Image (cartoon, rainbow, N blue to C red):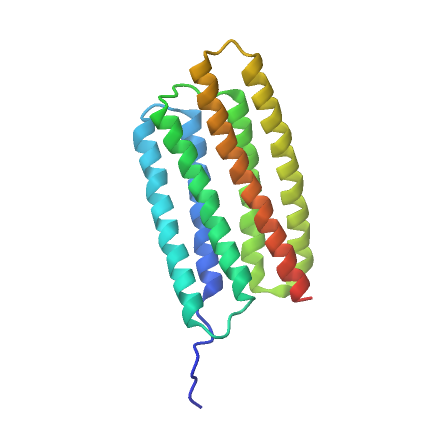
Length: 207
């Protein structure tokens, strides 16, 4: 029988690769924030990973346009790959700003936000890679609950970080720099929650 429409375009493989990219990105960012010497080179490494992730995003979207039958809803696939890409975009923005602003030492609040983001990304990766088998739907829902918990934790850390900034004796220019960096980290964590919402929707559609 002639198959007029390609049925399997390995979308799960592409999602797994994209997930691996954000794992690499947050690992590189954590290393950078722990030791800001040679920040330019470390930011460049993150930029390279971000470019690699962009290619995966473009490939996934191109395949969506060519594929008639997708393993899960095409809108969900599009949302997942773009939100994964957004997370790495924010990671890249944090590293770039940290370098361009000439930051020499991280703050405890920045490191705490990075840690929350790292833990949230670990859950996102587990959730995305579990989509291959809908028998893991209960596990995916548990992962989504944990992502939501971590996002709430991120909100708490972010609010405290902003409050501490304006109570500090930092110069105004430093306050502005760190406020921007904190916002980028908090936005990355928010994107993880957006992915949790997409994962929940996929599970419900396939229940």
